[in-house]
Length: 406
Image 1 (cartoon, helix red, strand yellow):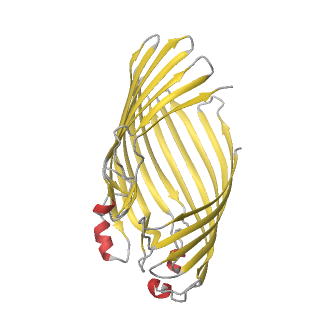
Image 2 (cartoon, rainbow, N blue to C red):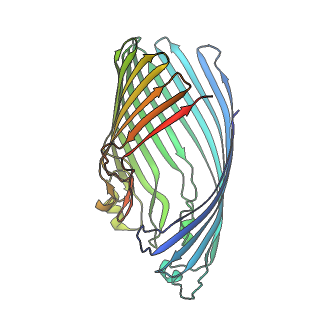
Image 3 (spheres, rainbow, N blue to C red):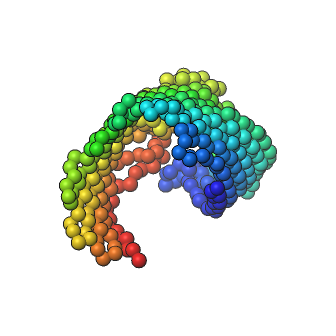
């Protein structure tokens, strides 16, 4: 019965627009307390049917305060709030070997969520010239207190066929649930303090696994349909908030190849290659800005490139007398993508390829050494891009390290 307790306290800040002469400044303080427990009973005595039942509970509390200074709106505003959430679930699963060539699995999960959100917006207005009320169409100070309860029953069924000793066929269907909640990103208006509703997904997947002593092939196809999808978007007064925006789909194929090209008494050479080709689309978008609706329906989902590729080559050599070396070369490609809904040219990150190289040497003296290089081509990448605000990936780096065993 695992029990997990976490806590964190941090202070951070941001100048908001990422320029040398910022128009506003945020300063944050946050305190997080979280505890969870899970209990399971399982029967894996070697019978034809395995059974698992269990309970899960998590309780977290967040105390957060944001101090906002704007040189355009001219307030100094503080937004303190406290959020609590309790989530409990009961779950069960059956795994049955119907025949030597067929295995069936099924499971259910009943989830219950409770959350609260209490806080205030306080314009300190130290200069007496704040335009906060006119800019956001609301008054400050204001306070809020929100509560909700939510529940859902989700499940999954799957099957696995074994036509031969090396071939596996599988298929699965299931539903998923993401509970409703409060955003807490910004609280300039009452509208931003309201909860978003729960979201659901229906997921289908099928695939093939073919394995022998030196080669493993996988081919999968998937089709996921989302309802009440969440996104950060413009609210009625042009502030930003997380809201339910509609329906979307994500479907595609993926595959991988793992091959041992060579294995001798002291050397080996392995290659792993995997690729994913997702097709994503926003099917409907519920919003009160017509222009945003028409420009968003039909777009790809944020953070979903048209394809990704990962490859790795591993070479090992046993030099004898306790000396052993391993060299690993990796390539990762990610196609162009936007991390934001309603993608525009200045929010799209171009495709990027990262090449990395690492060599590890095990010694008989009780310590290991390594040398590594990352982003060998010194390519420029943008994990996040929004106009002039950009998060730039790390440049070419190299280093050496050592691990000593006592």
